[in-house]
Length: 276
Length: 250
Image (cartoon, rainbow over all chains, first blue to last red; front, side):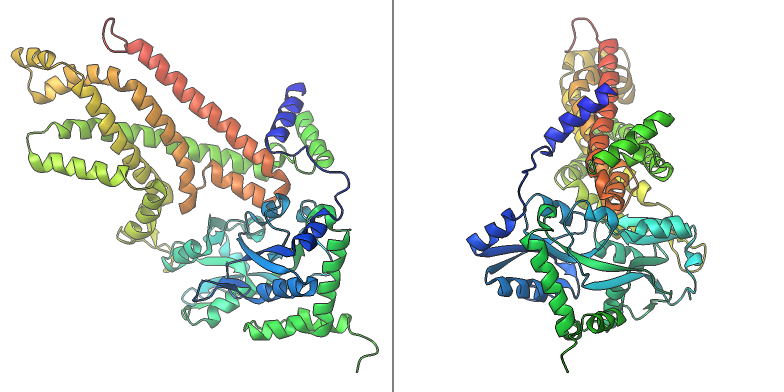
């Protein structure tokens, strides 16, 4: 036991874990305001939330949200492309000031990054499968190879609940290629992203045949020390306002995302009781 | 065993970044064991195959036939000068298209060589290219007079290679070979790009499922590879000592 504790201390030192300033509740926020620049992590490979357009700029629904944050603060915006498997680490290490990166709001993630309420979007799990198979039920995935992407939390759920054999690639391009190469019976991913793929016209022989499961709200994140400070409270206000003003529904339409009941419900929930 | 599980469960409660989940959760234990198994299969298969490629390649390099020598040289240049990740992706996705497949259900096309197979092939060829050069250096260190002596005793080319040159060359090559094999074992982690479920793949999966387990999973990787490479190096050193010929080589 002693050895293990020692080992832990050493490794904690290696990973720079032990330095945690005591009163850091507003440090990052103040820093952003002083520098006049906010660095926001967004996806660059996740159409239409964050992706690169023809000229290489990162655009998308979450990028619009990031722009609105910077405009409201009156600071300059710098976008940093993050991935599912490194987004929380980037935030922890201070490479980005906050993150709007299609992240599902999970209990264990709240222990690592600061997640201000309310949530801004939701998506569930579904699969992209060839029409040729005519899949009807999640149970049909049992013991079959299913392509996925490293970093998605539902890989585990599909494995445990339906006994699918998830083959997880490091990127979406590889896992989709594997599906086209018939190395797996389906590609498990967010339903909203699959819908965007189907709408793109490049997947005409494929369908999204199953009932969406595990609807999970999305969350943006600030440094965990600041979630109860100015930064977290400010972002809560931003999200509340996006819901109430219908901004999110507007952006959804702008980026060609199928309208979700969730956003309409939220708009109704936060509606101003005096407004007409 | 129970108290170890309890200890780490408590540790995860007290320190949210130090969740050694793969020491107490049966699913995650299974993941790590699978990962270790696949890594060992990859390592052993690639070490053996790359050694065979090295020995055969070095022999062909001394061939009388010019096109054979050029062929070996081309092979070395191709595999030594391109990144192993690119080779893995190319073998699996591009060459995988041309291999025969069988279909159990009408849609799936299982290639006869699966991703583990392609990883073994491509990593063996990668390390084999270095091994050819390492053995060549060893062969060139065998004095001409020794080979002539074998020839005068009536050995033909293959016999003198197998019984005289190679055993001596092997002894000279061992330190360099040692280095290359250590590198090979570590390079097996790159098979993650074609979703080979080796230990790095499993570790990444664990820390994606449980962000709290990230540092422990990294620690596991360090400890495992230090151990695995340690065993390899220990074995190679022992072999080196056992094969030492007094007054010859290192």
